[in-house]
Image 1 (cartoon, rainbow, N blue to C red):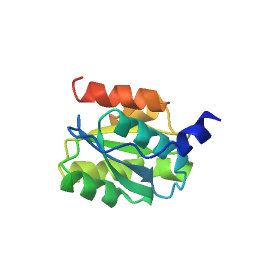
Image 2: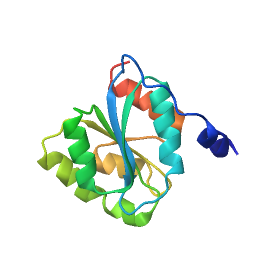
Image 3: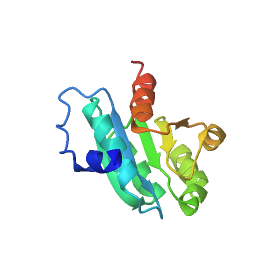
Length: 139
């Protein structure tokens, strides 16, 4: 029930002096927003500015928002096998755009070996996501 409680939490305030900027969303065709929302709210509470590309976001949305907002981290929620299959395309677009943002993945369809394969950080919980993001920012 903790996921339900976390979804009912009110929207955190925008941080006044953000630690960093994170673009976050679920990779197309994944429609599961609950895990992404739990992580997004936790990151925001921890002091990160979060740019939400939403659910079923194509790789191009992650890339354009990361570019437009000078993102430090791109956080991708992957809860279905078809979304996992789109990870290589996302990584190709990130590299082609010359982005230097750190990549963080999590969700039911991925594990640490998937993250290692693409050079990303991996977290299983929202608490791990916050710790990883802070570490990526040198905190």
